[in-house]
Image 1 (cartoon, rainbow, N blue to C red):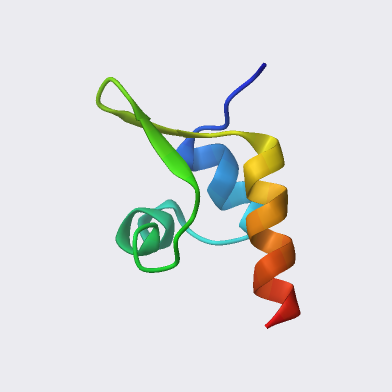
Image 2 (image 1 turned 180 degrees about the vertical axis):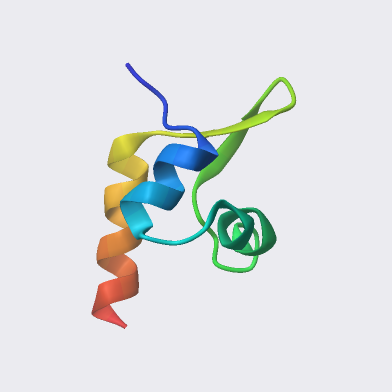
Length: 55
């Protein structure tokens, strides 16, 4: 399974990387730490985005 990087998540959301880094906790973007890096499962990102759009 491929995990998405912050750069890939930013591109997917059409946001700058800095926005993703600044807001991932507050926005509850479903990142997990892998070592010192943040990674996200594509399926978790899809669920998170669906929940954002439903609000």
